[in-house]
Image 1 (cartoon, rainbow, N blue to C red):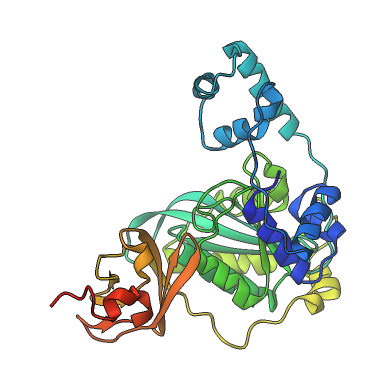
Image 2: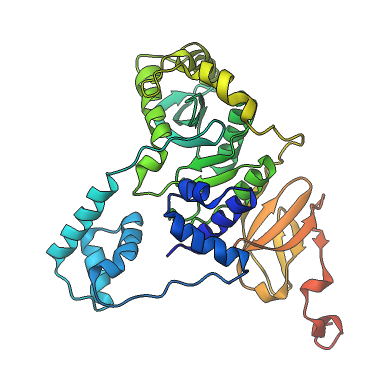
Length: 380
């Protein structure tokens, strides 16, 4: 059974006009399963919660995969099953885990249409020298258009959501357009919980994808071939660009990447398609990409805050109110130069204009109980 977030993803793709076969292909699920979800969406039915089943080990397959994705060892999975009174030997567990891993190595090669999809990932390339002469851990961001195999690479010094979004913006600018979907790795920057069935996207990345008009689809941890094109791109970058090169500083690294991208990477005959990516892109794909937005996306500052008993959170030396029902809860904060948005479990619960100055309050009376507003419990 699919999780709520996958239900939301299917609903989003449906709203973009995709049919059930296209959606099933994008989310990598049987079309019959997708059809059931679509029928629920169209009839406004609530999403069913998965109920546990007793007895056979196969019953716990998805739970076991979830534990594997969380990094639990075989012995810990064995102990967890024993805790819920599943009578099974440790050797049987080991065989079961090995069987899962073998099956995940089998995959069907996916072919995509022009402008339909891009795949993204980060790859670590070692220590490099920045413009201040400091040696820093360095990653490369890669976005690859799945049809033409046109690549965009950019060096980064972190994997924060802000960096992730800026790299996307630069890639779209390089392509002069936007693909319909972006298939992402289970990065902390893009997914809070690395679980394909319950991908909880950070609100900032969700806002960004909505602003640019693409749908983001996560890759499943134990299904690396969901994102095989870009992972091979990371390997290609390391073997064909990084090895044997020296970089004076960060600016020099940027210049060398761009020169190599324009004159080697995207002009070579691609090993899989046997075509030149840049030629395919200009002839068959570029004109089908979605246009870049007219308005720039303002990257917000994000974080978490606790809602105090006065129904306010403290953000950058000022105070913003939120509904009293969430007092004591940890809330997610999104702040730009223009606005402050407050969320609880990805649900928007309050919006305020950003305050300039310090020690000031932005308060909505609707965030207090009526009894307090009427003066019955108001403290003097």
